[in-house]
Amino acid sequence: MRSIIAVVVAVGCAIVALPAPTASAEDDFVALAVSVGSGRAAGWGTGGSQDQANQLALAHCTAEAGDVCEVVAGTRNGCASVAFDRVSGRFQGGSGPDSTASTSDALAKLGSPNGRIKATHCSS
Image (cartoon, rainbow, N blue to C red):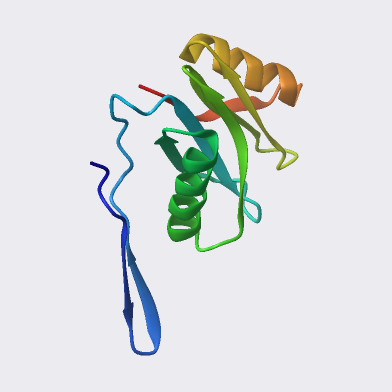
């Protein structure tokens, strides 16, 4: 059974309690979300569908970054990575059957000599 993410709201301000996502045996899909404002790779999630993984990644990213986020990478039965170029501020997602392939894909799609991997997560 999947744990429920709890959101606690106090009067005057929102306090969000989000545990780090964990992959379980039935989580075939993975997604990574990035803060649109900062490019920070701030959220990831796994789930039984790509939509479920995307929603978890967005919720985690929004809570962590406090900003608008977008899903930049996702896949089934594999890994997703985010590459970031500090000089230009650009970021790009990639995916593959393992972490080596997903990081290579993200860096190739970014196409920058300044690119660095910010995050990689895999489905179960």
